[in-house]
Amino acid sequence: MNTFEKRAYCDGYQWVAGVDEAGRGPLAGPVVAAAVIFPVGYQNSQINDSKKLTARKRDELYKTIWEDAVAVGVGVAEADVIDRINILQASLQAMREAVLDLSKIPDFIFVDGLYTLNIDAPQKALVKGDALSISIAAASIIAKVSRDRIMEMYHRQFPRYNFQKNKGYGTAEHRRILKEIGMCKIHRRSFHLKNTDVLQVTIDWS
Image (cartoon, rainbow, N blue to C red; front, side, top):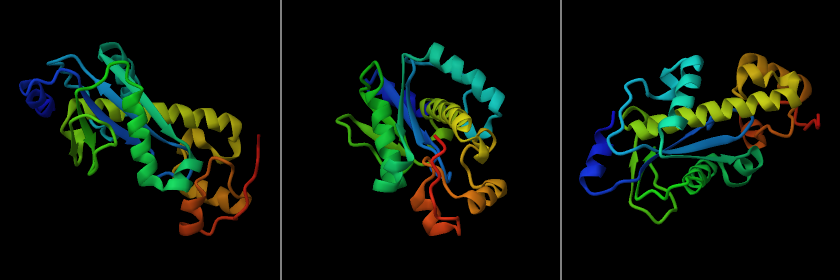
């Protein structure tokens, strides 16, 4: 899992960051990104792609990563940003913000996916990087847990949508509620107007 980090260390890099995001697919809420730098040679066999872990295990590793990492950064792009610049650009923006949020400036960055970031640092994009790089896998956990907690906060503000359970994803229940009462302010209008027959009104429950 840390093969790519080892190569970077052998090339003389010390502060190697992994970057990933969570929440590209939901109908509501932000896309959240995280960046993680571990000490040189760090290993932890429990850290894996967040999608392969239970919620309980993610919560455990979230704490471990914060304790063990040299630096952790988080970036958020809310629904209005996603609607304005599209989900890909919003994801890249959140990942860039996560890197800039790090307390230590990375000298090399591994980015999950196809694209590198608009940051002046050596980078490598890794498709399915959360299964290849321990730093990216850790970032995927931080991003996922951070986003879930944001959606639980939004659930308290907009309880009728059951965000605590669906986390903004397009479950059958969520789509049914949307058809009945329309969207709230954290729904991604660009997603709904193109892909669903949602009642096209926005309810302000604040």
